Amino acid sequence: DAEPMNQHRTVQQGTEAAQVLENPAFKDALADLRRVVTEQWRGCSVHDSQEQLLLLQLAKVTDVFESLLTGRIEQGKFAQHKIDLDKIKNESAAKRVLRRFSF
Picture 1 (cartoon, rainbow, N blue to C red):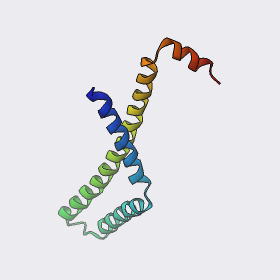
Picture 2 (picture 1 turned 135 degrees about the vertical axis):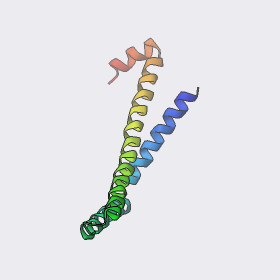
Picture 3 (picture 1 turned 180 degrees about the horizontal axis):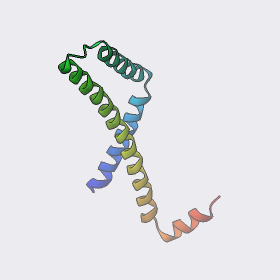
Picture 4 (picture 1 turned 45 degrees about the vertical axis):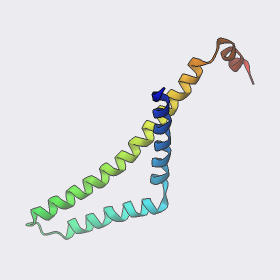
């Protein structure tokens, strides 16, 4: 079945996305990017609407990129939850009874 394989891949991608977002070097680079864009925007001439637009787009792309990684994490969590539910749904009635009463 292709769906469980896709779910496992989604879980793996979520794990990898979390590793990226939690990576100190990535965090620093993202913070530096935001700082540089903000500094350039502040130093930009009020009459240079093209540069202002470019910097705004860069800031938005940075936010979208981070959101995509966060979305992958949430998708991975959801896929793992579905995998866990499918395992419970597919186990026999006897195993369910034993699982409920095991310590």
